[in-house]
Length: 232
Image (cartoon, rainbow, N blue to C red; front, top):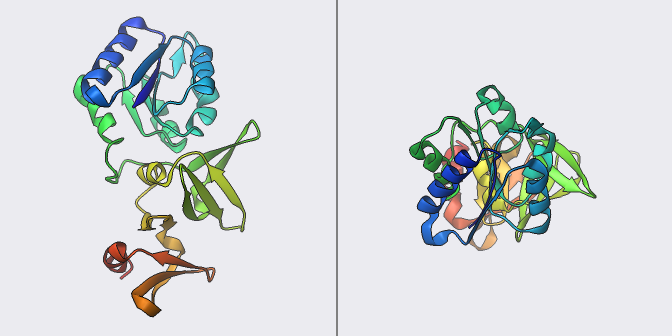
C-alpha cells in the first residue's frame, strides 16, 4: 500500500500518518506527505499510489479545483475535511469516503476498512465517474453506463449510446464505489441490474444475461444463484 497525504497542517498530517501506519502496518510500503496542492499533484504525476488522503482547503486552495483529475487516477481517495457540507459533492466525484474534522482514530480506520472489503455501503452516492483522456477529464453520469468490462488493471465503460471509455480503476475498485444497483455477474463483468432483461441457460451448463439492448453477457457459475434471486 502506497499512501499520499495532502494536508497543509503539520499536526494533522503527522496524526494521519501515525494512524495510517498503525492500521496498515506491514502492508504499508510507502507514505508521503505534501503540504500543498501543487506538490501533491506533482507527486501523483510522477509516482504510483494506492490511496490519497486529501484536505479540501490547503492554504486557501480549493481541493475541488483538482478533484476531477484526482478521482480519475487508479487509486482510492478519502477526503479529510472540516467542510462537511461538501460531503455529498465529494461522493458524487467518486471518493471512497469523507472523514469530517475533527476526527478520531476509529472514524479514520472505518474509512480504511472500505478499501479492504467489497461490502456495499448504503451511504454511497456516486453520480458519475471521471475518465482521464488526452490531458482532460470527462465526467460520465452512471446512468449512461450499460455495463463495465474488466481489462486488467483498467475497466472498459460500455455506454448506452454505444460508445466505450477506458477507466483507470480496476473492476474491483469500481465495484467498491458504485451503488448497489450494480452487480458483479462474472469475474470480468459488472452491470447495472436496471439494464438486465433475463437470465439465459445455455448449452454446456453455461449461463448468460440478456440485456435490454439485446446483448448477452456471460454469468459466472458461482454468481448465478445470487443473480437469480436478485432478479426475481
